[in-house]
Image (cartoon, rainbow, N blue to C red; front, side, top):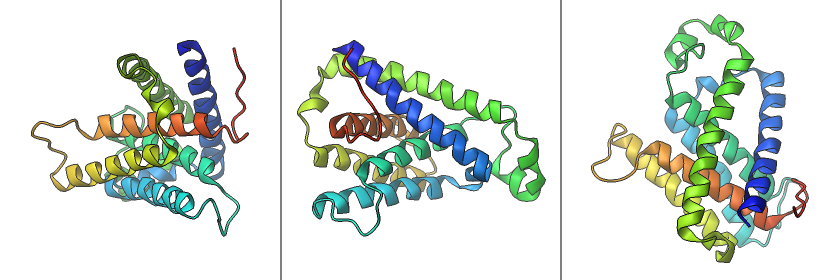
Length: 200
């Protein structure tokens, strides 16, 4: 079963990464201008819409469903994680706001390599946690998965208000990693056709 889960994880991330690259082509890495709280608010906005759609039985005014929002959350979390790291070749927000031409000097491969490295770490965490928890996510309701995401968004907000410091708890990176994996689980459980899976 672990092999199937890893296959499905890879398919979800493949879809997210492809969308990330297409948006980067359209807009460039403008997300680098987001401050930490803004990135967290983007995750919150999408999680709130998912919860609203759940409460209203997916009766939406626009065509995008919950699956699209989960994908968006995954990519915003990865953007956040990239931003938290001091990666050579990716300028700080202060550098970019001082000189917007800095966008032109960013190598796309640097950003894509950072994305892939973060995904690799998250996949390792998925294996370890799923081994310890024994596929517990499979018996969780979709509402519970969404609530786990929202709880972690609020944790990040609290940690940011404490200048990123925690006394005994896991920090922002751990919260973002968990959010990504809960989104992956949700997309696997939904199996809406947005991401094609097959039994292997």
